[in-house]
Image (cartoon, rainbow, N blue to C red; front, side, top):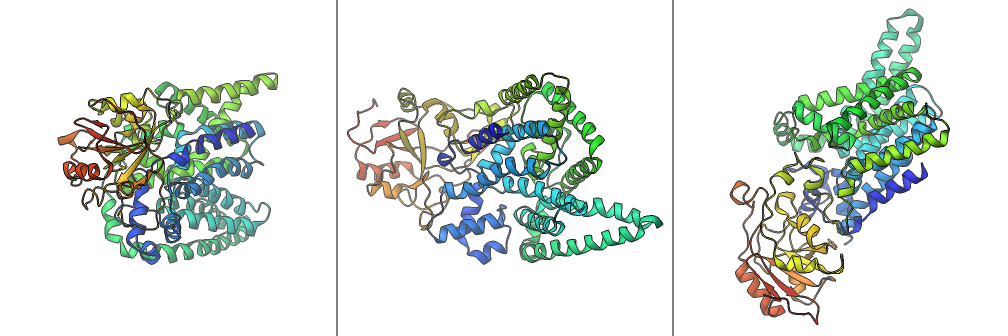
Length: 540
């Protein structure tokens, strides 16, 4: 287990400090720059942001400490904590061999790794959702310090629900599950008194849970009810998207391997049922009801598997638990125990190699959150692979590929950090050098082509810098400034037009030339300026 925990921590933290913020990670940044804490707490936003995380980010911003690392840190810690907390909470009902394999599966889960590496709430929701369901079960069973379990449940459900509303369909389910059991007891004369006490206790716990949730959720629900309602009934999950959701939960892309893992899951459910029917019934019913409610609500983009995977974060650790239990059931026939341990390690290693992770961890790769990696683990069905038309690659990038990986840093501008508008994951895999983006305003005029206003004073991003500062002499540790002469989109051009006005790059490049001197490279795609001297003139 120690090896699995260390490996999982490494996979979650590797190159994290160099990662670019992408896509939905910018929702919170744009919001916190526009409004204060009261405004953040009172709205969900047109583009959903996590209220508690955004309040934390706003606090960092007010103290001039908002950076990529400070934004990622809480999620990294939550992802690592899950590796420690989940096996510990179920140590009395899950055998040591199963816990060891389970920890290994949690450690190499591509979905859980992604949750831990993105500045979105899913890693915390996965951890807190698991804790909430387990704590309620222990409270109901009167295990140990009952009040402590109740307090832990309330805290975990409150924070998870504040972070992501849909987590409540999983964390509040134990009230219905155990409430139905208590109502049955009321109808039986032999257990009526005990059942009434159980119901009253659940009412008290329910009040303690709902009141704080109502306090923090009522204002944004009232303020943004129209926007929230508009997002329901928008799209529908399909049989194909549900299948691809299962593939992503398992962290694979192969149908035959999916069948094998599903068989192990079913075997694990059967084995666990023999020992602890309550755990199996609670978690599987939470899974079924939660997914049914989410799919019935038809939220926006639910037809895409990654969306349902994120919404179902609280139940993923339980699914991997049953896979581990089934795997151990198969290995129990292996003797001696050392051989079984070796086979378990081999199986986890084979699953790692069969998944997408080997394709993520090249150096440098600053775009692991990009949809080419996260939209679908199968390149045959991932539109960011199937629709790719990278176009001609500038010889400048091919020249960079001749240098040692990671030895050069380039700053690209203008640049929008949205997966459909970012060619850099493919370029970086070619040139293998470090990348930063620069806000083009006001050097290129003032427009919507930047991710956030260049006037923001509390941001200390290391990977998103300012072109104006470069013209004033800052280099940000970079060797070259790359001026993009035209936008790039996926799908290309007319099929997916660039969503904002593109600056006048002829005039902008002239402004830069006036400050930095003649470029060292120019072609139809890019104009490159040297930021460090002496520099060998590249061919033009």
